Length: 123
Length: 123
DNA sequence: GCCCATAGTGTCGAGAAGGATACCGTCATG
DNA sequence: CATGACGGTATCCTTCTCGACACTATGGGC
Image (cartoon, rainbow over all chains, first blue to last red; front, side):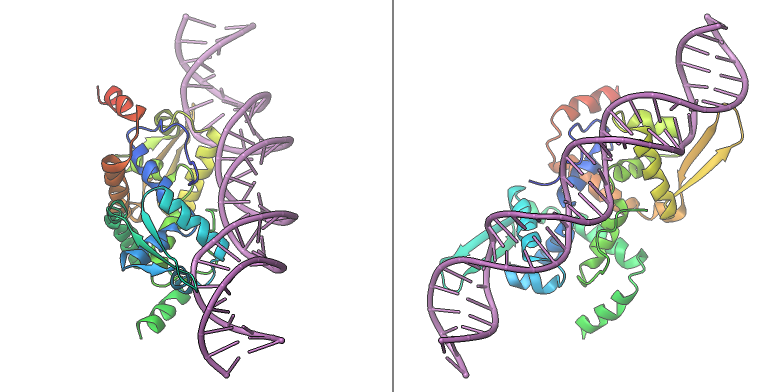
């Protein structure tokens, strides 16, 4: 399960903020959700988009997102294995949140080398 | 300083999401920002809104927010001491983000006992 | 026969985050 | 004289997170 940031949500009414944060906190969840917003992806497709994530981390993050009801995991009984990850309906409700995070990041973060990287990807 | 979630932001273009998360991550930052959006607060005023935060944690979180340029700390040379915390202009740019987080939390989180707590506060 | 890709799992250990508790000086109040 | 409010610090210690690395099974291509 996801990290429990607060066992008691006694920060009313701002606690709703923390309650949401609780779900997308986790080192890679934000990006994973972002990429899944664009469509279904397989395990290694996600990996390729997140060059520095270890398989172990990716697994745990995806499992937590699944446990929280945000992503669906579809296993194909094939060889080689094939597993597809996609957003659930609940997962898609996070879209405004992810968008807001992305918009702020684009506008305010000095991503430094990232800008170049973005250009590369855009090309 | 704030927790460094990623030393390399090589998750382009979703990294903007993580970049933002990096700032509001930290166990109490979300709520603190939320409360400061409503107006300037003194140290103990924030504490009272966050019953289970220890002074130590509150200090570190506020200091990190200050270091990141989101909140301004104004000390009054009085006795007893008086310190006011308010959002900077940059801090206010986070408003859409906090709002999105809050909106999702209100709509989707089962806050359980929180609803009652909210009522108490609203009364 | 060997290596690659697929989608993971297991274990280990370092390092960071966060909680508990006690304490600081000053002034006003009872 | 003692207590409380104010805005913190200092110290210690536990918990959690995360990264590294090795390893699994299967089948296809060279």
